[in-house]
Image (cartoon, rainbow, N blue to C red; front, side):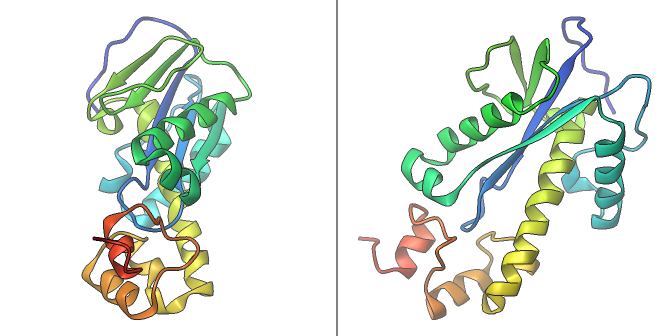
Length: 198
């Protein structure tokens, strides 16, 4: 992992989101403050890790982190606010949920939500900052598990397989069965499936 330089503080929280692109389910965010005394080996961008490795790291992060928290914005909020604003809201919720207040927050990406502490957006932060990598793993494992659970209620859509992303299979099933209450109505492929697109 590249070393990323930021103002020296002790309590740095990393924040990342998963689920901006899918047509179904919440956007899930995580905030993590790591414990320098309990290093975690192998942190990386969650998308570059195998599912098995992600699950093992998920357990280790929860066990060793000084503090961690999940935030989310539900499909109705995404439809109301738009995906960018809903993501910012979910990030604010994750930071607010930390049991220890961070002194500084590093956010994956190129924009920061409004926060009560100084924050910096870090492009490709999930592969440059250990705290953001840890957050990306918690968020991805959480969301993937939610999709697997949703798959049990709606097996015809294949959510466990594509995690709600607009794959050809998902779009085909959406056209065939219509949308569930968990689909994001403001997303164009869902609007088309519901006959709402002009």
